[in-house]
Length: 134
Image (cartoon, rainbow, N blue to C red; front, side, top):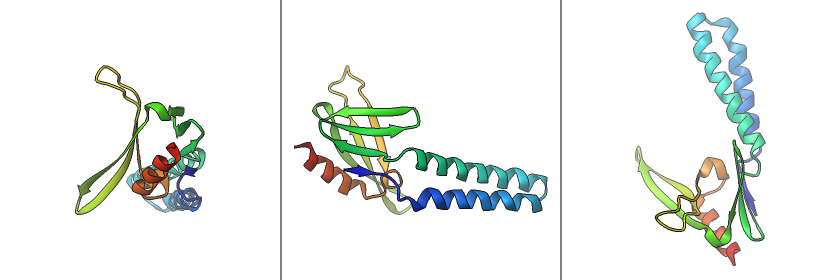
Protein backbone atom coordinates (compact mmCIF):
# COMPACT_ATOMS: atom_id res chain seq x y z
CA UNK A 1 0.00 0.00 0.00
CA UNK A 2 1.25 3.44 -0.82
CA UNK A 3 -0.03 7.01 -0.90
CA UNK A 4 1.09 10.17 -2.68
CA UNK A 5 -0.52 13.11 -4.49
CA UNK A 6 -2.07 12.27 -7.87
CA UNK A 7 0.39 12.51 -10.77
CA UNK A 8 -1.56 15.38 -12.28
CA UNK A 9 -0.74 17.63 -9.30
CA UNK A 10 3.00 18.08 -9.98
CA UNK A 11 2.32 18.48 -13.69
CA UNK A 12 -0.27 21.19 -13.04
CA UNK A 13 2.00 22.99 -10.59
CA UNK A 14 4.87 22.92 -13.08
CA UNK A 15 2.64 24.23 -15.87
CA UNK A 16 1.46 27.05 -13.60
CA UNK A 17 5.05 27.91 -12.71
CA UNK A 18 6.11 28.02 -16.36
CA UNK A 19 3.07 30.13 -17.26
CA UNK A 20 3.81 32.61 -14.46
CA UNK A 21 7.44 32.70 -15.53
CA UNK A 22 6.41 33.61 -19.06
CA UNK A 23 4.16 36.41 -17.80
CA UNK A 24 6.98 38.13 -15.91
CA UNK A 25 8.44 39.64 -19.10
CA UNK A 26 5.40 41.89 -19.49
CA UNK A 27 5.50 43.29 -15.94
CA UNK A 28 7.25 46.14 -14.19
CA UNK A 29 10.18 45.48 -11.82
CA UNK A 30 8.08 44.95 -8.68
CA UNK A 31 5.69 42.69 -10.56
CA UNK A 32 8.56 40.65 -11.94
CA UNK A 33 9.87 40.03 -8.45
CA UNK A 34 6.49 39.02 -7.01
CA UNK A 35 5.31 36.92 -9.94
CA UNK A 36 8.79 35.43 -10.39
CA UNK A 37 8.82 34.36 -6.73
CA UNK A 38 5.38 32.78 -7.16
CA UNK A 39 6.61 30.94 -10.27
CA UNK A 40 9.65 29.61 -8.43
CA UNK A 41 7.46 28.49 -5.53
CA UNK A 42 5.14 26.57 -7.86
CA UNK A 43 8.10 24.92 -9.59
CA UNK A 44 9.63 23.96 -6.23
CA UNK A 45 6.33 22.42 -5.07
CA UNK A 46 6.05 20.52 -8.35
CA UNK A 47 9.58 19.15 -7.95
CA UNK A 48 8.89 18.14 -4.35
CA UNK A 49 5.68 16.31 -5.21
CA UNK A 50 7.30 14.59 -8.20
CA UNK A 51 10.41 13.44 -6.30
CA UNK A 52 8.77 12.30 -3.07
CA UNK A 53 6.72 9.48 -4.57
CA UNK A 54 5.31 7.50 -2.88
CA UNK A 55 5.07 9.81 0.12
CA UNK A 56 3.93 7.01 2.45
CA UNK A 57 4.28 3.27 1.91
CA UNK A 58 3.35 0.38 4.18
CA UNK A 59 5.05 -2.93 3.58
CA UNK A 60 6.12 -5.85 5.71
CA UNK A 61 7.30 -4.88 9.15
CA UNK A 62 7.51 -1.08 8.74
CA UNK A 63 6.08 2.08 7.25
CA UNK A 64 8.31 4.20 5.02
CA UNK A 65 7.89 7.97 4.73
CA UNK A 66 9.78 10.00 2.14
CA UNK A 67 10.84 13.49 3.20
CA UNK A 68 13.11 16.14 1.74
CA UNK A 69 15.89 14.96 4.05
CA UNK A 70 15.58 11.30 3.07
CA UNK A 71 13.56 8.21 3.87
CA UNK A 72 12.27 7.44 7.34
CA UNK A 73 11.49 3.86 8.24
CA UNK A 74 9.04 3.56 11.12
CA UNK A 75 8.74 0.02 12.55
CA UNK A 76 5.22 -1.21 13.31
CA UNK A 77 6.16 -2.15 16.87
CA UNK A 78 6.83 1.46 17.86
CA UNK A 79 4.34 3.19 15.58
CA UNK A 80 1.24 5.01 16.80
CA UNK A 81 -1.19 6.15 14.11
CA UNK A 82 -3.61 8.96 14.90
CA UNK A 83 -5.88 11.29 12.96
CA UNK A 84 -6.17 14.82 14.31
CA UNK A 85 -9.09 17.03 13.26
CA UNK A 86 -9.00 20.80 13.70
CA UNK A 87 -11.23 23.60 12.52
CA UNK A 88 -9.59 26.29 10.42
CA UNK A 89 -11.50 29.16 8.88
CA UNK A 90 -14.76 27.24 9.07
CA UNK A 91 -13.41 24.05 7.53
CA UNK A 92 -12.41 20.84 9.29
CA UNK A 93 -8.85 19.84 8.45
CA UNK A 94 -7.61 16.30 9.15
CA UNK A 95 -3.97 15.31 9.48
CA UNK A 96 -2.38 11.90 9.89
CA UNK A 97 0.13 11.67 12.73
CA UNK A 98 2.71 8.88 12.78
CA UNK A 99 4.56 8.84 16.10
CA UNK A 100 7.29 6.49 17.37
CA UNK A 101 7.80 7.98 20.84
CA UNK A 102 7.61 5.20 23.44
CA UNK A 103 7.57 7.33 26.59
CA UNK A 104 8.17 10.75 28.13
CA UNK A 105 11.96 10.42 27.87
CA UNK A 106 11.91 9.24 24.24
CA UNK A 107 11.43 11.96 21.61
CA UNK A 108 10.94 9.44 18.81
CA UNK A 109 9.90 10.58 15.34
CA UNK A 110 6.72 12.51 14.59
CA UNK A 111 5.54 12.72 10.99
CA UNK A 112 2.44 14.78 10.15
CA UNK A 113 0.87 14.34 6.72
CA UNK A 114 -2.18 16.03 5.27
CA UNK A 115 -4.55 15.28 2.45
CA UNK A 116 -2.24 17.07 -0.01
CA UNK A 117 0.69 14.80 0.93
CA UNK A 118 -1.32 11.59 0.84
CA UNK A 119 -3.68 12.17 -2.05
CA UNK A 120 -6.42 10.64 0.12
CA UNK A 121 -8.38 11.35 3.28
CA UNK A 122 -6.06 10.89 6.30
CA UNK A 123 -8.81 8.96 8.14
CA UNK A 124 -8.99 6.42 5.30
CA UNK A 125 -5.20 6.08 5.29
CA UNK A 126 -5.18 5.56 9.08
CA UNK A 127 -7.77 2.77 8.78
CA UNK A 128 -5.76 1.11 6.00
CA UNK A 129 -2.56 1.33 8.08
CA UNK A 130 -4.25 -0.19 11.12
CA UNK A 131 -5.59 -3.08 9.04
CA UNK A 132 -2.15 -3.61 7.46
CA UNK A 133 -0.52 -3.69 10.89
CA UNK A 134 -1.79 -7.12 11.47
